[in-house]
Length: 469
Image (tube, rainbow, N blue to C red; front, side, top):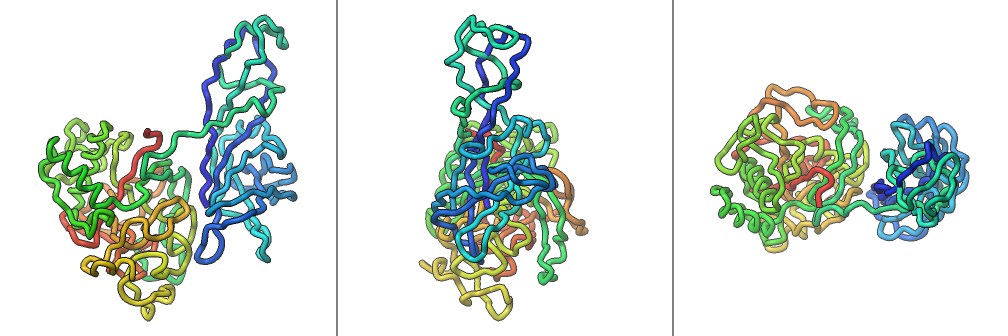
């Protein structure tokens, strides 16, 4: 499930001469969510019954619910009927339901908990995980306030105020203006911030020995909705050749809308920098620790220190970012949609006799086979997106990540926004491909190869820090 906060603080043009206005503005939060049902999950269409609660990080304290009945994180009694179209629904939390008190956002960790009922015998189901939302301000319309009008202990001296409205009361819900944040950059989707379980937690998959489960916390970021296509590669490569990127390879691609492949790690890192500079953004990769010399040519073993992680330019995802994105909001599943895979869901090489979770059919994928099987890539976006709106996070082509694969092996780095090992020759690739079996398409499966390696089953996608135009 995906729930994106669609409520952003507005600067309020208010000027107060009163020492205080005793006020509390009820919050209205505009949320968009995604819901899928079944195994494998399919986007729900129709009317559904929802229940909402705002809880703390442990899920054991209720701050608010749609009908005011939730306690200790429990399910509210009453439901709200909403229309769901292709898995998406929108709701104004606090409107035509119990208002959200201002005191909720005095808490440091507030999360939205959602229950859903599709009208079947399944009954009301808790959608996981709870979605963290930040404390936000609110916008008000003060057009009815007149200069010189007495309000409590002070006097309004202008019809515009500065501040976030904290302390104001008796402002009608109609005066609270939800604001939709900027849409993600074209062709990208927002991956929300938050903790997730990284690594293998499927007990039956004992063959994965280098991905013991850990909890990693990832800041929000944007990710390319699809793998970078040959057409995208060519456009940036052409620009780069005229602007200091003298050795970007041509790469290969079955067609313009297929993923680019046969590009090594050095090439895709430089390409990300070229894409950034082409769009007049700050590059992420440098050849010196001071981050003054942009990486444009040669095979440079860029280190973690030589990455400007706060830059607004493009870069490869870290391994933790990649896995969080691949899981699409699910936890503990083999694949981005559930625990089994079939060639209706991803482009991989079926081998049903080898893996109980492979539903086949056997051999090359029919879509990927159009036009030949060397390679058997498919047009990007040929298969359904995961919960975050990403396509081909399993199969089609393996995807380069930033991280080194440590040698000797060490467990995952944990914490917030891990960047991977500081040493090691090989770089990580993830996701499986058109010529690999179902085991390689698992979210927790890790592969690695030397950074000079290029092959027709290996491509990439890029990420951006949030807040880009």
